[in-house]
Amino acid sequence: MPTGLQSFNNPAEITLLHPFQGTEIALSIIVFILWVAWHVVTARAENEQWDELDNRYAGESPAA
Amino acid sequence: MSDLTNSLNVLFTEFYYWVTVVMMFLIHVGFATYEVGVARRKNLQHILVKNIMVIPVVTVTFFLFGWWIYFAFVNGPFLNGGVPEIAASFYPWSPAMAPNLADRITGVFWAAFLLFSWTAASIISGAIMERTKTSAFLIMAVLIGSVLWIIDAAWGWAPGGWMVQLMGYHDAYASGVIHAIAGGAALGVLVVLGPRIGKFGPNGEIRNILPHNVWMASIGLLLVYTGFWGFYAACNIPVWNIGTEGEPFFSATNIYLMPTTLSAITFNFLMALSGGLMAGFYLSKGDPYWVLSCGLTGIIAASAGNDLYHPLQAILVGAAGAVIAYKGHYYVERRFKIDDAVGAVAVHGYSGFFGVVIAGFLLWGYPAAAPVVGSAAPWFGVTPDGFPAINPLGNLIGAVIMFGVLGFLPFYVLSRFLKKIGMLRIPRRVELAGLDTNTSGDGYPYLPEIDTDFEPIERREARGTA
Image 1: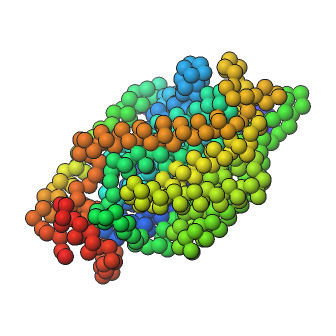
Image 2: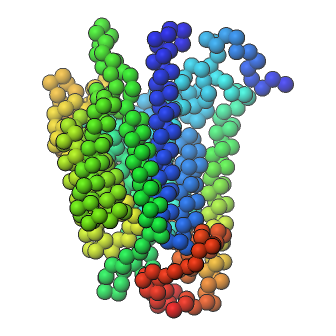
């Protein structure tokens, strides 16, 4: 199944090169959601890591 | 693309920006190397990854909305007009934002600005190192890299920007639009974040936290110089008709489409660098870290006017900027107990601010940019040809906007918010143990650990406050 251009024979009439043209708005929304979700997920994971380490060190007194 | 001369111009311009982007990548390599060198052994991998993650986070947001902001906010909006229609051409789904045989410039021009965005974020990264959560920093990176710096670029760096058109603002190589804003932003975070454990003693005495590798930090700064040179080229338009249609005259121009040459900016880049290095050598008595930082400071200070300065003016401005940054760093550290781990607020913020202000005096009366149809009359004077004129007041107000309004204030507010929800600072016990205890472990597992004079002090302070 062709996903986009099938010939480069007439370059003066070609503009966009990428496959699945017409999906750009949907792709933008998907990437935007993934970007926000990435921040949320990684921030949560980072906080959990620091808290876990903090609890581990809570029982240890720093060496003199 | 069927006319050879026109095609060569377009293809040359596309290639020109592509080369500058690759050169500017060295800025980021340099900042990463530099910050890792300055960090202590227990934190270096955390610093490295924090810096690397600027790349994807700022890139994706600059694609989604940063580039659109540059075109949409040129009039404020609503300070000198509304949102221009052209902004609609730069939504992330627009044809200009895709591989397109009919548009060979947008991608490379977007990338040139994107590399400036990474730089702005990296400047903050160094100042706040060794105690900031990565997730907090990456939010800051998006805010400065894909929102605030590109707003200031729209205002003060686009030929039709309201600050250029109304105030005659001139800042050709970004003393203010990159460096002052990033320095101000770093200061806004530092005020809220606080110093590293043990940096200041109970009586306010300042303790020196040594870099783990001065040589690596120095190489990092040399790489930043190299990338900065590419940045200068990226701020130019390589071929532009500065004559008329009837009498064309082709030249390179600055970002405002006003004439300059690659020769001029090469003279001035090197002379400003030299002025900074010489001042830094004198001030720091040969400390490599400050000699190299002052070299960078020299370039930053002269950058606002390096399209037009004489090289002997550039060296003097560069040297003066280095003095202001060096003295300013230690004054603020002593007086306000601000722990800026790399001196970024001074190197970028104070010298950038100074550079913008001094350019207003030295270039007083020069045309800032061609007047835009529909723009209100310039506030602080016009040239005999009717162009908004560069002037001291316009540049002073501009410097305050960059450093204070778009830099310090938003980041102070953001940092207060992040602190309130517990997202800003690493827990003190972990800070003491080292940020690499997170997942990475020791960055030099085959070398024995040795304390400097500082580590026992740090442990003692942590015992008292943990």
